[in-house]
Length: 91
Image (tube, rainbow, N blue to C red; front, side, top):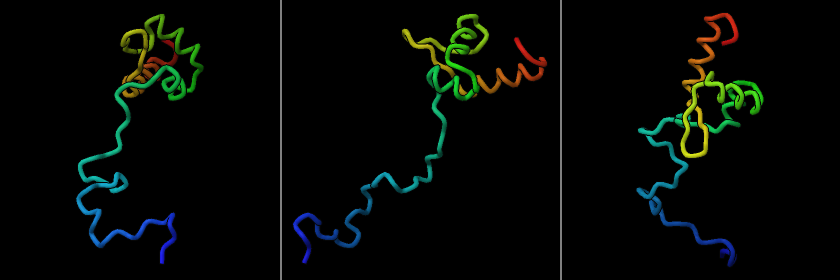
């Protein structure tokens, strides 16, 4: 007998086709977000949010403004860092 707090077990195949969210879907792959916040971008770059803000306001770091927010594409940040490496340092 089950306790009042424990629901009875579901019949065989009862969850089939409903998708519980914990199963891997063949068409879904983990992807990074298109845009990240200034805090997340600063963490990716390994610099402070204030340093990122200064670089962004000077137009040195690629960013996108949406309303009052400044957002960053992780792939654009990676390309920016690679360009800095090829230039041998600061921009």
